[in-house]
Length: 340
Length: 193
Image 1 (cartoon, each protein chain N blue to C red):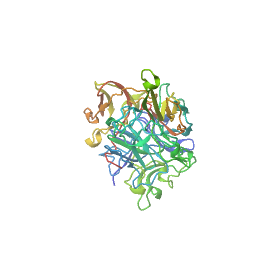
Image 2 (tube, chains in turn orange, brown):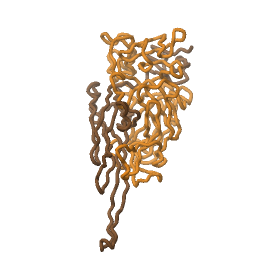
Image 3 (spheres, rainbow over the protein chains, first blue to last red):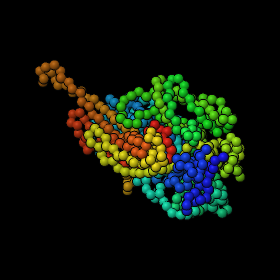
Image 4 (cartoon, rainbow over the protein chains, first blue to last red):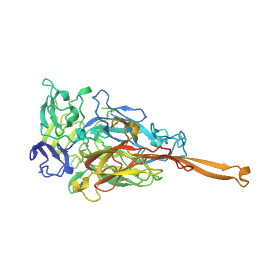
């Protein structure tokens, strides 16, 4: 059996928590073979998330929570991805091209479906912006459909990529396993949290702010006491050198192609046993050339029957026309709530 | 209170490691996916971060900057490996006090209006003489892996130009960017999260 978890002294003079990927010895693991390492700068703690079927209205992911001090990284998927050059009748241009249909605007508190459009005439000036709200300047194949998003406690916008937000240093208490009475996390002696809590380097887990936690156990807190709901995780679909990997490439055509998913949630109810696809991407990412991108159709509900012993399920992909290479990962269906 | 955390062997199905169930879900008999499951293949751990400004590009062109994160060399990855990353960009007008007030994922945009201008036959004294002119707008940001250690960010904000005068009319713009690189391999085909 391999050593998987290390709590306490993880290096000379360094104390914390490490969790290695399956089959990897945590005492000798490379950083890329760890699922969690308390020495890293920021971690994918989920601050908010949800599912939106359609529309163009702004999504207030902050709601009643404490506002973040930065614009966070929002990861998301939606049905329509890739480039488009099919403008709608509402466009005044002869030609519009956008390399990314699944386009959004992010602020500290919101995200909103956006598009890029501006009438190509002499009215475009130094303060003009082509990024505008909505998806109506292109055909319906660019409309928002089945948005699944997760807001992470990771800054990702100009001005916030600073040492203060990422790279604090210093020796202090970093890990709580058991009872947490830190009032900044919404707890007290009479109403403690219980679980595992890890602070960022240089931040004392006993007194730090909730945004300084890179690992948290959610105890159902709401409002300004809310910290996070779990962490961003992707499921195994293959191994490389006997180590699980989440990323995969697949050549997809009208003939079904499949991958083998290790679905350790396959025994749960149908609500949670089917995973979600982490942003199937078929987009060209450079050059802006005009090409035809086939729409990709897949159904998480078409998973093959689950094997109790191996936990494997086959997940199938196909295109409606043409063929293309996709690259993606699979996430568990952590929540089906419209908002959390 | 539900049992929430197992450190060690959870079951033959889930194996060994660290396991944390969701609020009010018993880790010994879960009904929902876990907050943390040691059999996961990937999480999101920040390896590298940076921000910067790319000056306004010239007429109908882009300008770029290379971000040397050294993910491949630092972590001993192969030549063809690429890291998972996220890039966000902002317009100059969305920077206040040195901080972005809004940002966007990479997206390149171009638009065109074609105008046909014809000389009257009376003026030219010949057959109708027509010529097509285009007005264009270029905007946005693109990103591309250059190697296992370098990501290139393109400022595509060339702004407005015209076949008739080629003038950008001072509408080209600087681009403010932020980038995060993760320890994981890229599963976005170079688009980024």
